[in-house]
Amino acid sequence: MPSQPNRLLIPSFPSSTPRPLPLGGRATPKALRPREWAGLSNDEILSRFVPGKASPHTVLEVLLKLHNMEHTARAKSVSFKTRYERANFLRHFFRELESRGGFKKAPDPRNLGQRHIQAAVDLWRKDGLKPSTIQTYLSFLRGLASWLSKPGFIRRPAYYGLELAEYQRSAINERDKSWSAQGVDVDGLIDKVAAFDPYVGGMLRLIRAFGLRKREAIMFRPNECVVNFADTGLPLAEKQGEEYVWIRQGAKGGRPRFVPMNTPRRRQAVASAQRIAFWDSHAHTGDPDRDLKQNMVRFGYVLRKFGITSKGLGITAHGLRHEALIEEYIAITGQEPPLRGSGEGLTREQEDAARLAVSRLAGHNRGRASAAYLGAVLHKKKGGAKGGADGGAAGGDAAA
Image 1 (cartoon, rainbow, N blue to C red):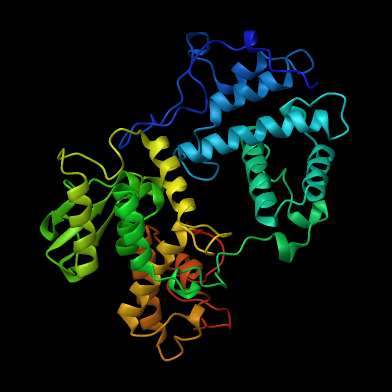
Image 2 (image 1 turned 90 degrees about the vertical axis):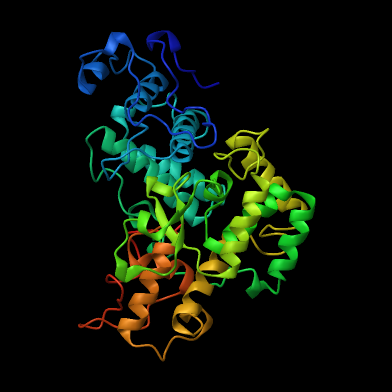
């Protein structure tokens, strides 16, 4: 059996993977430190845990306490989901090196070597993990390396014997994931869900109308998020309606956005949500008797019950987000997106403007993120490279 972390070596303080917050709550941007660590630098704290004497699992827990709230590339905190998944993976990674990787003992994280990474990659391939999963795992390990001031330690996939074309991330969508593309009666299915569970049905209507993420739909506060255009602070030249929805709670990366209520579908979705959340001006669209985690579990249960899964009807809640974003592109351009074999009649300026609008509706800052929903950019920049909006489709602002 692999050795377990020696918890006595770590001062008592809150876990590095916080519990789910109440709806509308936010995590503190800085990890709390125990009194024993007050005034000490990260290096001074780690020096208290001597390699070869301190349990590797203990050292990992210290690193998680110090760094797991941090974004690996930007000066900001990361979401609860990222912290939770990253911490769970790293704990499992070091246990597996000991139990299945051929090592008598898990290495101290500070002494992690390429042979350990290679052993783990070999296990993942043997287990038949998807390329996207392996790439995520390598990304988590890249974060660990950055905590230890070892940039570049995690090499490119090819170094570990992985095919570059298969394991390199691409932000270009090559398959239409919208519900209508799978032959589903979108509104009819949402109505059936709403009859069974009004809360989940209301969330799906919001996703359908505004292209929200699941978390944003659950945390949506319909009675306080509707604002007049004058209160948005947007330039007058961008005005698209008298009323806007302020999407703030649950927004990825903490990036709020304003979306105009300029279509009957959007106005009806907000009205439906307001009927659900009638009991309080600050109420969210989730079931008030459930916290965020419970509402997310319920959301998944109801969708599975109605076959809204990849293995069921071949659709997901995220595919409904694709539906909304594709419809936005069609409304702006009058054409289907490149993903559906159209878009050739647009000028580059028209395509750039439409892609940027779709990206902003989705909660992204750059037009390239639209490729995840619309397909590859059609127009080429000077020099032959495909571009548009802000210069390309792949990489960078990965859409979600």
